Length: 569
Image (cartoon, rainbow, N blue to C red; front, side, top):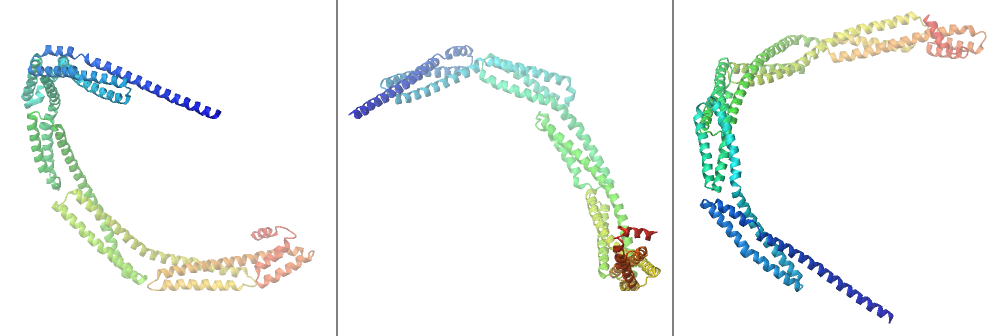
């Protein structure tokens, strides 16, 4: 029973809260709608009280022509239509919104408010447009007179400049004066139209005056420069160019690629066409076109200078080619003469002869190209800029050819050098071998090991092989070089062996003699020295030295160094 009472109470409270919230929400919505209606009422009243009638009364006082009268009538009708027809409709819509709110049809009321807002916007836009158009008329005189006053000031400045420097305008002075008179007449037209209060027509007059004076400013500023360029600078540059062109052609320059005569003729036509436009004061792009013509003359003069430089360069390169060509030709001729002798002395391969012939053929082709280039230069077929580039290519080919020839000459020269080197090496190693044999004889060793004689025999045979190669005709340089390297290695090996044997024997002998002082007192020393003597007389000098030094080192540490010092003495 208690549980049922609890749930019933909870249900009633919940329903009460929901109803309360809905009432609050409806009240808030109603307050907002009422506030919006109040705002629209204010805006509607502002539209009704717009100062159009006051503004129209000012326009009415200015009406002196049909055009302005027509505009006045249109504005008046538009305002009356808004005031008498459209604003009352807004009143009706506001009443409908009030009715819907009383019936609590807030959603429909909201749609009606949107419709009211659109209507108010449309009426406000119309009224603002009328006010702007009226403003253009009522302030037209003040605005236009301010503009025209500035234009008159600018006009007087331009006229003063013209009058002061009238001589600078030459044949165009009369045209400019007529244009200045036209501007003065347009100022008078402005005054006449302002008297009639024709504010629509005055706009076009002011615009026309602005354009005429801006154009006159360009005319006053640019015509002196145009006359200077078109009547003085260009004719002078054209005359100088023509004179220089004729002079260079007579001096042997080929200048057809520049089309100078045709371009001078076209330039004259272009200048005449420009001044036909200037006569009617049409200056559009005139200054740019005249400056372009002057720049063209500068480019042509620059091309002339380039041709002069190229001619000098061509003549210098001709001398370079001749010297290089003469040098390589002389070398090849000398080499061809020496080839039979080379083939007798050295193993000169057919590949080397073929390479030389190929270089000779390439040189002949290059000489033909060079002669043809000289013929072109003689007949004035091409400009020096092209001749110079072609000659550069020929010289580069000649340089590469010279490198090939030098490589071949170096190869031949290296054969002679290798032969000379072989003979020098033969002399040196023969002497070295003699020194080895003399040193061995001088040492008077009891026994000479077999290794010495084997190496001596090998070195002697290698020297004989060099002598054989040097006697061969033709001589094989590659084989000769191998023989020389082999013999040199064997002789040096034998020389080192001889030095080792003699040195070891000498040190062994000194160590035995030095150790004799300990024989009577030290049996072990006596035994070691006896063994060392035995080894010495058997020819094992190195082992003999090691045996004696090892024994003596037990008594005198560092004995080996002492023996070395004794040997030096």
